[in-house]
Structure formats: C-alpha cells, structure tokens
Image (cartoon, rainbow, N blue to C red; front, side, top):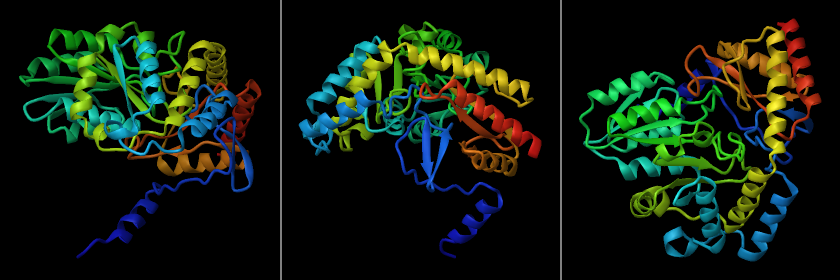
Length: 385
C-alpha cells in the first residue's frame, strides 16, 4: 500500500483546510507586504509593536556584532553566553521567581517541562482548549492524560479528587490563543492546593500584555505565588523569539538535568537574548503600549457588535470573529484581503469542528484609524455576503 499522501492532501483541500505559508516581503508590524501589495496586518502576535521597534532592532544588530549570529552549541556545552544569563536573570526578576530557564521555542519549553516532571504513575490534567504543544507534552510524558471542560474549575477539582497518581500536574493556558479568553487561575489553584497537585500556566499570550507592568496572567489574577511552573514566550508580546520557564531553583535545576528539549538543542543566538533584554525593559516601562491596546480593543469590540458580528468573550488583543463553517471563514478572509486587510482564517484541527473563525489580533502598532478601516471593511463584507 505504501504512503498514499496525495489522497490525504486532496481530502484536506476538499475540506477547505489546506494551509500554505504566506511569503512576507517586509517586517512584522502594522503593515504586511504580500505579493507586492501592502495590507493592514491584523493577524500578528506582535501585541506591543516591539518586533520592529528601532531600539530592539539596534540591540539585535549590536548583539550580532558582539556575539556572532549563532551560539555554536547547546547551553550545557559552550552555547550559554553572557546575554543568555542576563536575560534569564531579568526574566526571573520580572516574573517574581527564583530562576528562569531559556528554551529555543515555546513548543520545546512545554514538551520539556512535562517530560521532565512526569512519567508512568503520574497524571496530567489539561483544559480542553489548551494549545497543541501542551497537549503533545502531556501525551509524550507517559503520564495518564485527562482533559477537563474549558475554564471549569469544578470539573478539574472532581477529576483531581478521583486521581490516585503519584504526581498530579494541572496545565492551562493563561490566555487561550484561539478564543482570547483567560483561564480562571484562582479556581485552578484552589483545586490544586486541595488535592496535592501542581499548577503550570502557559502564558505565551499574556506576558507583556496583561498586568500594569506586563508580567502576565498570574500577576493580573494575583496568583503568582500559587503557580509553581510558569512558561512564557518571547516571540509574541515581547516581539523577539524563544521562550522561558520560571519557577523555583529546584524546578530549574530539574529541567536542566532532565528536560531533553533543553539539553539536546542549540541555544538561541545570544543576539536574540540581547534584543529580548531591551524589549523586556520596554514592555515593562512603556505602559502606553498596553493603554493604547486597551483603547483599540474596546473600539473594535464596540464597532463589531454594532455591525452584528458574533464576538467571543475576550478582553485581550485576540478578538476572534466566529464564522462556523470552513468555507465561510475562507471566503470572508479573501473578501477582507481584497479590501487591504490581512486576516487569516483559522479552521479545524486548530479549532473545534464547526468553529472556524477569523482570528483578529490588535497591536500597539495599530492606530484608531486602522481599526475604523477594518470595521468599514467588515461592514462592506457583510453587505456582500
């Protein structure tokens, strides 16, 4: 029989789920250049507008001049350079933790944590809408895998009460990447503390964005001291690349010894770490970015509701328009592109069946006029439909 790849690819096309990368001919920011045309970009995760910030770019250039363009080895061989150490210490301070540890990607961080902490005889409990990297990490850990209803602290508590596992790890996104809503972290912490479990929060979409200083979900919800494992990424709110895990000194030492995705991979370029130090400072100190975001988010929500669009329950920069069927989401994305708006349609398996959507994301790089142009395009698209 062999591998009938053509049949699988054809089926994905028929389902309107065939995906291809867009080749961008310009930097991430307010605008995107695609196929020789400039669009307003409403699908980037560059929430604070730092990915093309001049000071961050200058730090990357200087870092490359000082440290080269590659680290040359894994952290535990000879790839851990001074900017990596400085960034880990800054991230630990920023998140109120004893230590932090850098990973090359958020995906690797999540896999590394769960495979290092869990094994046979253990159990991992995951929110049903968790990111794919969290689900994969749980499955690869070898622990008994359980999923509970989205944002349902009582359902979690019931599952924990029935578990006799040696170690119990509860895992949730702080901000859910496709819905834009936030996890009820206090309820999860209550359940964990009542049933001798640890709570891990993936705050990829909260770091830089939530809390007055951009410290993320655990600070915004005042549960930082109740969350033993915090994961955050650098490539979204902070605008660079890579990820980190922050926690106790014992946790970090455990990851250094047992997290295969940390041990067996080349360290990120030191230049990226140097740039991330600058973006972290700017995210913390330039509070106008979060204030501007809040204004843009409210402006969009008010306008979209007036147009009769179904908005999901989100106060974050992630503002999904739920369409439902895959073909409809693709058609609306194409119509908006004709009007100069770049917004990718999100379809299964990224989201559940029947919940295809446009994942609109706002950035501090946007202006109020940009939001108004988007709303006008949505109004025109509604008339066309």
